[in-house]
Length: 295
Image 1: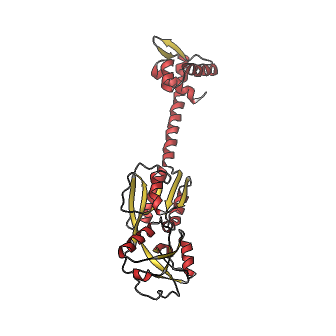
Image 2 (image 1 turned 45 degrees about the horizontal axis):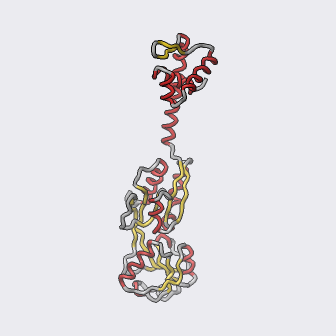
Image 3 (image 1 turned 135 degrees about the vertical axis):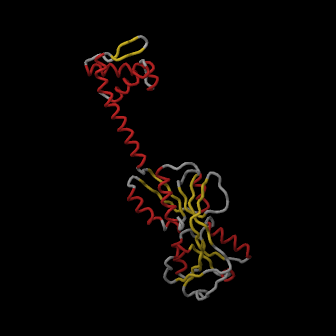
């Protein structure tokens, strides 16, 4: 005896005929007949008889169904309970795209989350900022963490979280290392180690420098902040980096701040505007609560 056979009986009683039961269940009429024939052979009784235009249970069929329908009801309850429990279980794969400095904050957030939800899997991709929104918009990433720029992108929801300050990193023996108040003009003739051109920090820096008319001389362009720090430590040049990327301050280098230029970027969460699934919404909520200082 199978559940599908009991479902077939229930549908025949509801619809009144084998044909209508077949239409309701999406079976061929011969499949409905087969279900009943197999069950009748197994039980050794006749289940249905024709009464007028409708199919009705025989006396033996009625006795059987009075007991069997409780099995079907219990199965339906079990199925509903299982679906309910699964809806509460956070499971699935979530893809995060983040800039490097923000990515440093993720382990402390994700470790307890993954322990709490063992069926959740996460992939993290470090990505340049100019392609972050595009990747989220085209569903190549589920959540983006990066600069929330003033330009509007239809189909995306952007939530500001915190402000990231850009600082100057200099070799400890550099002539400007002891300067208390750096200006953008101080950097005009220096060898600069800059992030790749597609980085939002680089874009903001170049825009502001262009406004002030100060020439800059990049000697190295590289996307890895750890490598940038090593070049500074080696005395190759000076760099402009997110403050979080140089905490604690690296050895053989000092931090400075440019006084005549406001280099700060608002960081936030980026996602598509459409409704999120359980796994994505759980991760999004955790990131918002942990990264937002006012949450």
